[in-house]
Length: 169
Image (cartoon, rainbow, N blue to C red):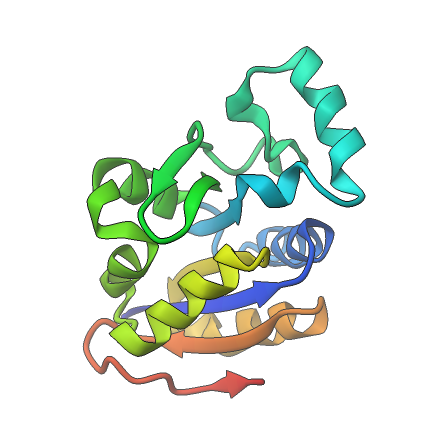
């Protein structure tokens, strides 16, 4: 059975390190998604790095540090959040069902409305959301990698239970 692990990171660097580790161990190669508010990318230490990328790549490459393994979308305007950049399977869902917003699309992973709203607010506040979908056998290991690299609010979800089964604060 497939399940999802969702976590929130303070920086893209932390999210990248965690996803590189997960991908390197072949735990969930094509099922890693990242969502970050565009405004977050244009501020702080990433500002100069992404300004340089913009001169070489179109806007769709804003998550360039994940280049090579995250299929990325262009900027997506989401209700309640604003403009986000996204990569991975969740990006496709956000493009196709923009009106559902981030919280509504997280329901596809079994996330309750209350928790989905919380994750949506975290992205709105500047955090990086990582969603990893994998076979149940790998879920604990993935959650531990997210935690090790700075992930917080980590929960494991199943489409059938709609209850988190694991949580790091």
